[in-house]
Length: 394
Image (cartoon, rainbow, N blue to C red; front, top):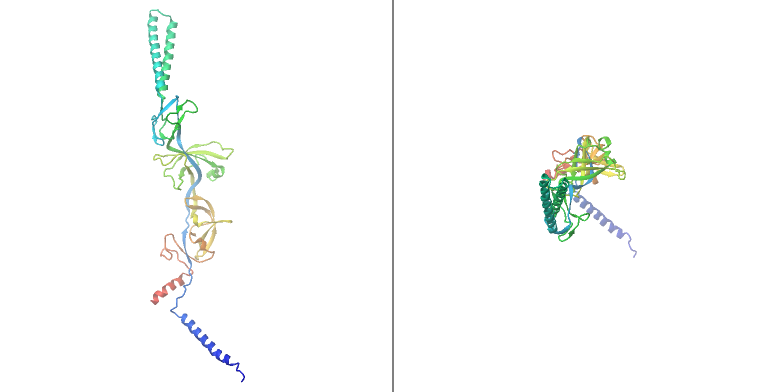
């Protein structure tokens, strides 16, 4: 009996039809109104700053180093054994305060001998003056006695000075330095006589130099005492010293090797906040720059073609804008060109932006969509409707 080859086809066709109908019913059920739907993508929220022209100080910042207004060396003026150190290193001292004591014994003996000699010559001179009145001695003998007394009195004063110099005192008010000699050392007069130093820190001096290219940024293209209107100091932590200073030295020549001009500024330091040797930055102020814009450093994109910022145009779309920058002012760039008053500079989400992409701008400190935020013209209405639809259904 021959096999019927059409039998499998007659069985398979109704089975395939049933599967297609079941799949269609499942897709219809999944596409019902109760299934969750992905809301349409709206414009990206961004923070914008509306540009307004400002005036900022015309300033040049230069690396500098502090130094005491007076750095006095304390040296021994007589030799001997150092027997006492009378101060604590690093502590403030007053002018005339004893710092070291050198052995006095030999100088006390020398002073006693000089005093005895001076007393003897003084008595001899007085006796000669009485004898000359009765012509008991010649005028030459009187003159010799007078000269001998003067020499003895001078030797006495020298011996007295040597004795007083065994106590080494601070020459000025200031902060004491490290002792260069220890108790028991033999002190000699000359190049090895340094015992310590005293640093006068109020006022504090700051040394720095300005190059010709930096001076060219100032009005007139050169630095003069009349050019500088103020001097500020930027501390290592970035803060500005609360008291302004003044220039107290301006070199009249340019260093031919470095091409720089030496300067020195002076700052009050009553509370001792500044220490000698600190590295700081000096900000020379020379008038103001008018009609410029301040843009946060984080909002400026630096590229090979130059600096640029992202702005939100009138249609709330991203518009790149090349700018011309000057120096930093605090944490902002000083923008000299490329912007105009009223431009809205985007300051966040810069890596996610593309030219022409829609954005929803808002002012700093405001939430996207807040009453004071800038309205988004494109895409805002659909997003609002999508958010409101579920609330209406509930």
